[in-house]
Picture 1 (cartoon, rainbow, N blue to C red):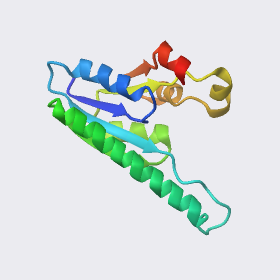
Picture 2 (tube, rainbow, N blue to C red):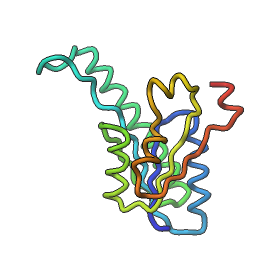
Picture 3 (cartoon, one colour):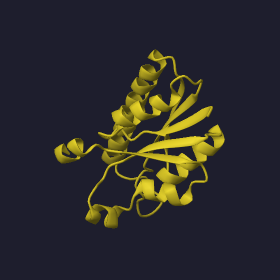
Length: 151
């Protein structure tokens, strides 16, 4: 394997996700693409942009997510991993798959939060959608049970 995409969402599973991915890279020269797919801005009725406070909040969140992504890039570089990070706003599953295809990823590594059935019913599951849509092998790293109990 030469190219791996790691889907980052900065949830509690992120550290474990990176640890597992690095284990797969050990003793191999693997290029890693960290991708954070930020949700698109909310749609508003009409053609006018949403309220300024909403736009400011979204912009602040994106800046924080970009900073978090840069910190993970730095951590991986410190471990001599060839890494690049991208923070992209768009539909999460489509964005991850598009970036994986552009990068020619041979594996996508992502986390699973282990949320309850009601939340899954209402919100769906990114990892489930990825499993259905991806033509690239996918490794889903679960949140450890002890961390599920805390969250």
